[in-house]
Length: 273
Length: 192
Image 1 (cartoon, rainbow over the protein chains, first blue to last red):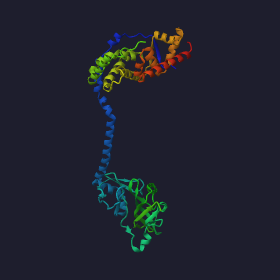
Image 2: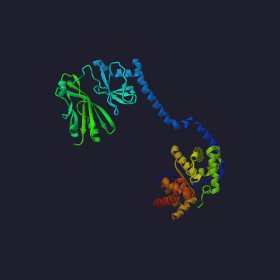
Image 3: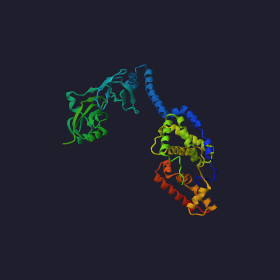
Image 4: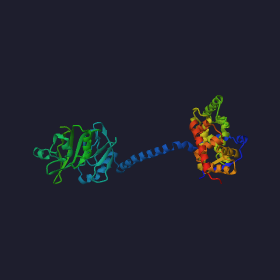
C-alpha cells in the first residue's frame, strides 16, 4: 500500500531565488490584519460569554416568571404563591391550615394560616420568606414550600375545625400511640426497628413527624401512615447509638373519618441492654 | 555527513539570537532578523515534503506569522530557536495536507537513491532504483520522517531529536530502526 508520492530528481531551488521571495512586510501585514479581526478577539471568550448570557437569561426568566404570577393576581409575591397553590384545598374546607418546617438543623415549628393570609415563617435563627411552592404531581402528595434560603418546608394541611386533642383522662389509656406497646421511655432497637405506631382499634394513625439525630445532625421527617420509614431506620442503625427519638403531631382517623391529634411520644432508643 | 550550520550555533550566535528573541517579544517588527535567518531552511523543510512551490512559500509565511504571535511563549531551554520553528512548520504542513487533501510528497534525487542501494549492498541497476522508490512509498509516516531528516536532509541526531521532541539517543535508535525497516521492505519488494 502506498503512503507517499515519490518525486525523483526535482530541480533544486537556489538560495538566491528563495531569498528573493522573502517578504517580512507581508507577514507583518497579515499579523495586523488577523490581530484586528473582531472574531480573533472574541473567540477565546466566546464560550464563557455564551454560557454567562444563558445563565443570566435563565435566572432572569426564573424570577421574572414568578413576578408575572404575582402581578397577575395583583398581590405581593409571597401571598400570591401561597394562595395560588392552596386554592383548591381552601375551596374544599375553607379552614385553617398548618405549615411545618422540615429544616434538618432546627426544631420543628408549626404555623397556622388562613385563606389569603400572608404568613411569615420564622425559625429559631431568623425570619424567612417563602419564595416558591412546589407541588408534587400526584394530587395526594404533600406540597413543599421553598424559603428564600432554599430551605424546604412541608405544610401539614389539615382541617383544623375538625381537629381535637384527645387528651382527656377517660380516653388517655386508649388514645396513646405506642411502638411495640411502649409509649414513652426505654425501647430496645429490635422492638423499635420492627414496630409501627399503633393505637386502639377505633383509631388509625395517618400521619406523624419523627425527630432524631442522624450522622448529619438533627433530622425531622414527616410521615404519612403509621410505619417508621426505612430511611429513618437506616439512619438510626447507621449511627448505632442510644438516643432520644420524638414522635410528634401524631394524627389519627376514627371510623367516622374524624381526625384527632394524639399525645406525642418520647422514646429512649437503646442499642444495648 | 554535513550538518546544518545554522542549527549548531556558537555561544556568541546563540546570545545574539536570544537578544533578537527578547526584542521580538516586545515588538513584532524586531522579528525581522530571525525571519531572514531561518526563512530559507524552513521553506526548504516544507518544500521538500510537497509539490507546489507557491503553497510552500505560503505555508512558510504562515509559520513565521504563527511564530510572531506565539513568541511570548518561547523560553530558551537549551534547544535552539530553529527547533521551535521546525515544530511549528511541521504542524502547519500537516494542517495544510488535511485542509487541502493534498498528497504527502517525498523528494529524492538520484545520488540519494544510489547511496541507499549501496547501503543495502545491491547493484545500482534501474530495477533496484524502481524497487527502492516503491519501497519508500510503502513506508509509514513516522519512519519516513526519520529517513527524510537523517538521510535526505542530513541533519544531526541532536537536531532530529529537537524537531521530533525526543532525545538524541532515541533519535539515533529510531533512525536506524527506520532504515532497517526500509531495507526489509526493499528486500521483500519484487523486482519490477
